[in-house]
Length: 481
Image (cartoon, rainbow, N blue to C red; front, side, top):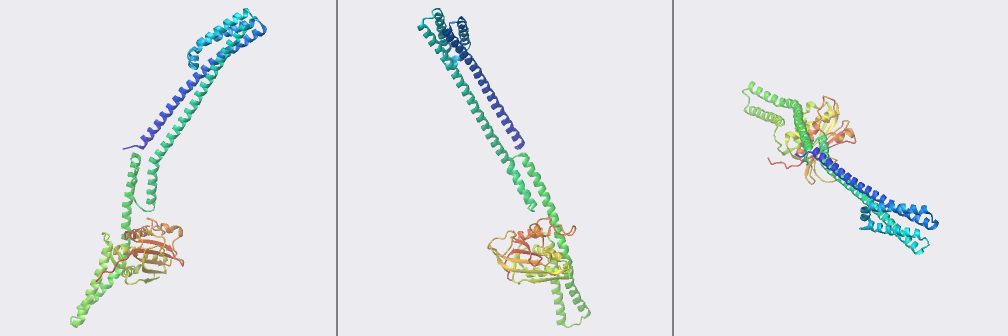
């Protein structure tokens, strides 16, 4: 397995080695420039000696003083010593035999100067001395110019190499930064998106496209946390379903009491009047059978709701389901709350009946709790086609455009939902109820069930006050009896 830390260390070691190498090259070039400067000082020393030699030559020609002749000889000897000492450097600078030629010229020059000192009136000899001296000085000045050019070229090359080295280092640093950013930033951005999804209630596992050991370990830890959250969420969802089941049980107990009372009454009459007319006895037996079927349907509804079974969509008559749910929740309805139902009997949705009943229980009980002692709950539905401009507000879910749906609306006259909390009502564990009066999972489970059906759900505040939930469920044909 790759390690991001090892890669970072390797990259920085490589960059450090590169910088050390470039520094070594720069030091070598500086040493060469220093050698050039030392050679330039030697050439400058030779040029100065030749110029002083010529100066005393001119003084001797003008004033005929013995001291000028002595100084001339001294600087000529100095120039000869310098030529012998730096012959190799001069030859390397100006070409082979440069130093030996200068020594020969200097020898002829000093010999001519000595002869002229003995015959000062010989003008031809004086011109020869001047020509030889000028030639020596000219060569010295040319050597100095060549040395300056060589030093300038070395400085320019060093500057150019330094700039190239800096550009290479900058490019490598940029490339290294980009590679590290790609190796580090992209996985971190993926983690950030997953964490935002988790914050919004989507427990999506993290699959990082990175072989680095650190990120793999982090992803495994993150996924472990998600698995634990999902497990606990399932536990809480089951608890919420049990709470809904408890609500349903209170209504079922009351509903089941009616057919049982009717069965008991009919059986009691048959027991007390064994000589009753056959037609009357048949009617009582038929009533017992009808009430038994009614009780069985109520018990089957309870068993279906409580059972943990697979999602099995089937045609469900919406009006019948709403009526049955309201009947079961009769004991939960506050005395001052009126319920108005406007549902056509031919509205058939395709869904899982127990799950849809849990949705209705959650929404109706929430509406009762929001309104308190007095209010009005309006339940209405109509057939529709999903499309743009169909009046359905911003929603969450997966309704497909062009599909036939049933729009179910539950509108209460309560205080409504604060505007800033509207986007959060379907988040898990979000609740506006007091502590101990709500788990924050009712609307989250409602949202999950609606999405499971391929529908969508929205919530908004009514202009006249109160909240309005709109559900879109896929429409279905009513099956033939």
